[in-house]
Image (cartoon, rainbow, N blue to C red; front, side, top):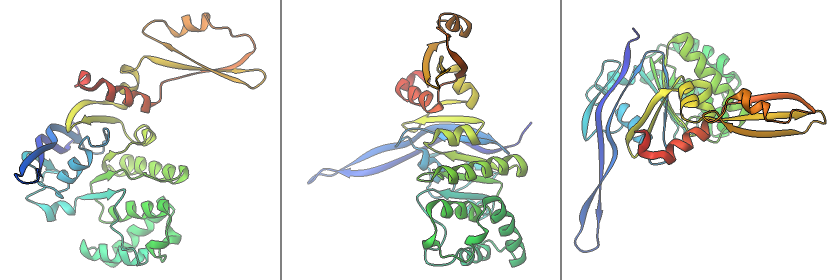
Length: 304
């Protein structure tokens, strides 16, 4: 049985703010409420939810950036709030809108500083950089200042920096935000390979449905800090929307896109009722994952 490397049990995180002009009162906001889940070694988990759902707060809790109001968690057997230094050597973290690289320094200097922080010998760090630069296609960026990198180049260097000390668990918070199509493809292929070949456990938050489909096997959906759904990516696509899309390609090159509900009629029945004259090709597709997730958001507590 696979080892569970992330264990979260009844986690709560509340924030307090003052309200009022003359007689101020504290207002409590629960960002994370009674959250429990586990992740096995080598598993890629998509941790998704609408803006303000509590995704980033949860990642910050599990990486010891924030302390919980109550509840417990174990990350690779460590309490993240009592063993922060030991935990730092076992996890890698990438926040899409924050950088761990020094803006004005060349990439090589940032890596040297990170290697020193993790007590990694120079020859080991150089070997690891060579491996990562080949896989992420960033070798030519070694001596470039970070401020001169494009967003896609910087994110690839961020991923490499987070893996410099060979962590067993990687937390990624919106790593592909703002990237172009090619940069996203490179990152997705690399993450999938990192998990399958090196057994790295990945917890990924993203609003990009292709990140989820291409990288992850499992989805955990939260809303208002509460777990709503925990299932496989495939089951998410097959169980929660019955709609199918049919694309018909005509002999003149035009295409027609139709849809039907598999709960009401079968594929065979639908095709029998469809005019297939002058049709050269037929493609039957599942609904985009983004559509399924949107339906779950709208459904709200019905899926809790």
